[in-house]
Length: 106
Image (cartoon, rainbow, N blue to C red; front, side):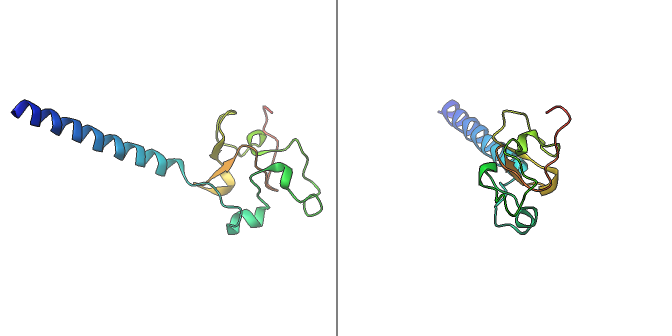
């Protein structure tokens, strides 16, 4: 019976540790930028580059999106990643803001 109790204890501790690591990873990853956030509004950020107001942002081009911007901090296939303009918050790969600058390798 002690083997069963010990096994149960070890499994419980391992699962609690796994949950803590998952929570830490999610917290480190950061929340997604909300289009209504003050910083997002100031930069004209949109999750979808096709929904940018062309009259308000005439410098916007359809080929511009966060994943080909020099401020993008993710891999090319990441759906969301960090951005130097938004601190710890993540932007959408398909997003855009007026700080967009062509990445050197794009």
